[in-house]
Image (cartoon, rainbow, N blue to C red; front, top):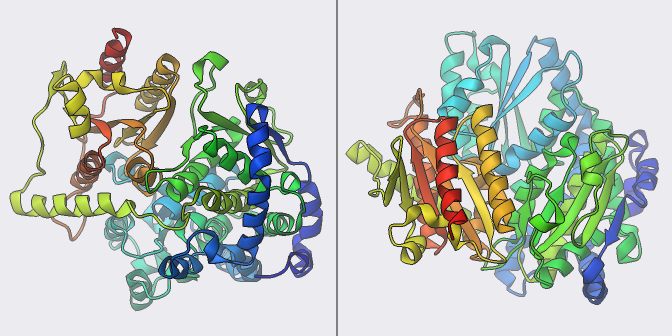
Length: 582
């Protein structure tokens, strides 16, 4: 890894030193009742930060075999420098795509392969005259249909670190089938981003994809924002790569060399999160203006998947509506992120009911630095909590459960289904997991009564893009928070399986889950498979329901006969009604 001085001087065109100067005083701590705890943890955070820059793997584990694995996950510390040296290649590639008349880019990826590009798309967007980006990280048939653009003018980014992830590979087969009758060579419309040695890398070479970007294998998926996984999509949107990479280098330089924890832009954030978690405030609540709200999805994944394991972890809360002080429990620490010069953040200016961190983002392109700030802070927090932040031991559970269910489908022609514990009007079925069933019997609509002080609620929806349904889901989530004072999470499946799913199954057993599925209005086949996207989505939902149950989580599966906002409202009314009667 290059020195802090080298980061400032190696690439003069990126203006790293002026950007670093602008990072001064962009973070302020408001410790409140945690002041003494932060003081007590300050020296530990400072030592952990120093060890991180040395790449001292003993920071996270004393086990030599685990240290070896961690050593192969620290490449993100050097990825910004690699991208600085790759800007020319990225610009040339993107200019050729634009020159050849592509108007749309569809990214096929999950988790770390898709969330950073989604942030860059939503916050910065495509420059005038450059292709638009659509991030498709769903197997819902409606979402697949919604991503249909004119194939002859569409470029498909197949992004997968392992190269074997079922969702992007199934989506790639679908879009290849649409391309083949429409263009002379379908492979000219495909670009792969993956590690060396993967099946995807082999296919991209054998089938002569338009381009193949090999990412360093020592960069984990959720730490890959400032690597090819984030910057290839940014380049295709015509974004300012100099600014994005320059800000990331500025953050690295400042975080490595700034003395004093509270003045360090990344270590100070780590101090607040770690001290709060040690004091029982394990619900990290993000307060973001509308312009930056998508950034919360990326932070949510980073924190949940990095810290939620071995029965411990920090619960990130993103996208929750702002409430009054009375709406919150005493288990939260707040992080308020502002965009300098933005006019849409008045509601987030109110005083926060607990310990807080204020961060000011100097400009949209400074997200390049924010990615690094949070990655550094998360690595330090892992050390402070005795957690390896670079593995995801429980993610494979849901994948294995899905594969088992799909194998059964191929044999029996249907997915196994448990009998409903209760059926609501309209054909809505409710099925409890074992842990919840032990406490409630068949009283499935009373699931919310299991929420206790210190718990969190998670609404997990395997549904496609529909604004009316989304509005009902948001209303349900907010009502649970307001009535229980519990922190609430929301995730679309299967995206959350590659994000918060690790925390749900491997973190503290403090979650109460409602998992929502529906029969699709119109299914979409998967070329070369015996199952459709609708079947794959249902298998993923049932697989996670089984995995949550096996982990002893309190979970309810709600199945709708069709994706309908009115049915979602019926579910919310029934479940909230039982909560009100207790």
